Image (cartoon, rainbow, N blue to C red; front, side, top):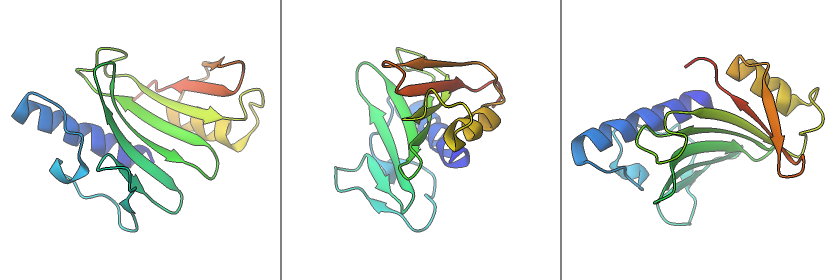
Length: 134
């Protein structure tokens, strides 16, 4: 999922340079999405795959792109450079296995991020790993 999120973030930054705002639509970005997906049916901001969904979320509080594997409840999200909060930060989040660091989701996030630091939130239902490299 990281290559897709990285490509979405880079395409959004290119769109921002050309237009002064981020796009809320996949079809406005200069990138090809991986084959096998289709619009989510919730407007133009989501794209569904058999494994999950990729989303562009642009509003006044955050500008973020993410892909979530809904089969294993794992999400990789990148806050865009001009996002008011967490700009430029990239995270791997797990859901439902926060207290079990040996879960497949947490093992993947730890390996993906190159981080041994994580934090649990929402009463232990989520674990967030911050990327140490890009």
